[in-house]
Length: 146
Ligand code: HEM
Image (cartoon, rainbow, N blue to C red; front, top):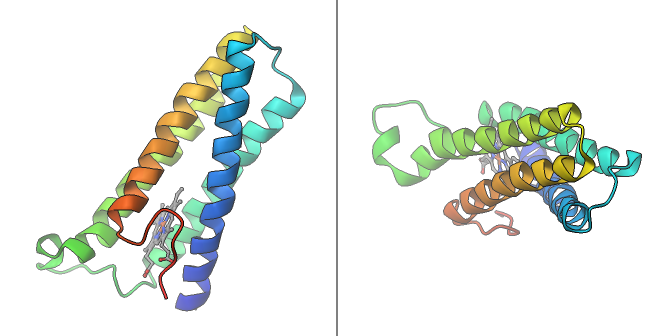
């Protein structure tokens, strides 16, 4: 169970990153080019949101399987245990909340230009948090553990 969910979570990160980065580029081009907000724009933003939520669910399962997640008095003193028990989860949830808020705000905004700008800002902030958090894992943004 543990290896399966670890590799699933690890591999799924590429899907999340590709979709979020694609949505950011699309939003920037739409914003700067003053383009309309099309159905395919909305779908890409939605798929990026769904992928982030799926990663959250896989991560939650992994959280209860991983030997690196530890609840003891020593957890906060040990950098690796602290990272996997507290920091990874907290930072990733903040990033996923930003994507969720960005997507739901874009539904309420009327001007296409502002919809694109809103997606760009929220998804970019989320991507920065995800990338910084992965750098802090010492496994690399694109690297996998053995
Ligand atoms: C966009 C969100 C997320 C991304 C991109 C992400 C990405 C990753 C990556 C790349 C790894 C390392 C896998 C490897 O070394 O092969 C990892 C590990 C892990 N993630 Fe996430 N994660 C996300 C969200 C979450 C969330 C929300 C949780 C918990 C609820 C979580 C729990 C874990 C745990 C427990 C591990 C440690 C696995 C181990 O035992 O080595 N992740 N994550």
